[in-house]
Amino acid sequence: MGPLTGMRIIEIEGLGPAPFCGMMFADMGAEVISVSRKSDGADRSTQISERGKHSIALNLKSAEGVAALLKLCETADALIEGFRPGVAERLGIGPDDCMARNPKLVYGRMTGWGQTGPLANTAGHDMNYISLSGALHAIGRAGEKPVPPLNLVGDFGGG
Image (cartoon, rainbow, N blue to C red; front, top):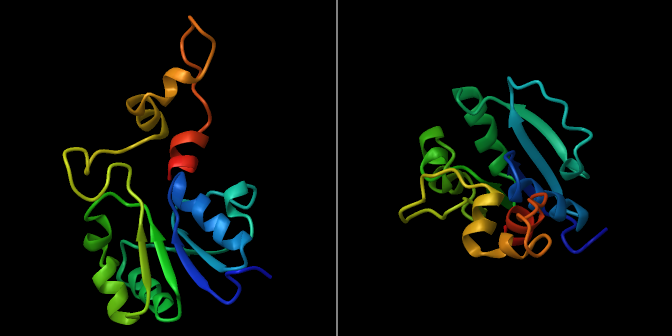
């Protein structure tokens, strides 16, 4: 039991902050359905970010996979995704597509550099964020090169 008990969240699997966010939602009692790529075959059951989630494999590049995701949206409270700008729309699962099925759906997006701006279509990684922000400079011993941390600062903390 938790404050989000009774809520259903769809997480379109990705890297960094979106799976971490889904894990936190699950920890707070939400039913989290993690949508993974149908063809990748990886075993994610041991990844800490999969804690407390249900998993479904869908090929979102197929009409059947898109239809199944849109069907899930009909009974969901929220969806979270971390695609680059325009990718969800090209797949047919952007905010307009999903909210046409469920106008009350909260559609959450997480991208490295936002939806607009000069870096919007650029891949973003934890190291990029913390180096540009100056946070990487403070990690490590004085006079030595910075020590790259796990993605705890930019992806998880910032995301």
